[in-house]
Length: 268
Image (tube, rainbow, N blue to C red):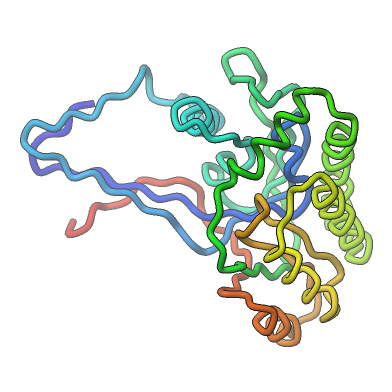
């Protein structure tokens, strides 16, 4: 589309955290995920001759927009990634997302869209940022190569993680927090065993469990980034104190943020 002089375009999308099931979203699995009250914002302010061109039609649906975002990340930026991040940032809120029929190197042109279900349940979780910025590609790429090569341990881990995504969602909806915590811990043990965690993550996870969290695991890719802990108690002070003592740079609570949206440009 052509932007006339002086016209700007702005949009934002929320951060997200994967609660259970990840990283099976890359392998036809399932993930329970939620948004975090942080947003990335971009604004385009055209000069006199600026033209912003899109490759084809506007996305026909939120599903199509999520798939297009994932395809740009995978094929144009060369990042080894799954699908759940793009779906959560697009739809927003608290979602169970099923990726049946999708494959690591697939595309929506030949594979089904994901199935997205809104979840109405408590969000008894605390997120802790390790303080270590990381490249998710550097974690996912070697595991992806092992999966594509048919390595049995990696294949079994992803199949089980997909099942844990479904079991964990069921446990949450039943209010069975002990069961959910056990599923989260198993999910993390699977990822750790195939080399998907990291020292900074393990330090915070150990601190959360020692403080009494029912479960704790990676909220995204390992080797830095963020972990999520299950804490159903009203007072999260003991957990937060333990996480800060273990080196957490920031703490967050999940919240029902809207998905991607257009916004008024600055000064409008």
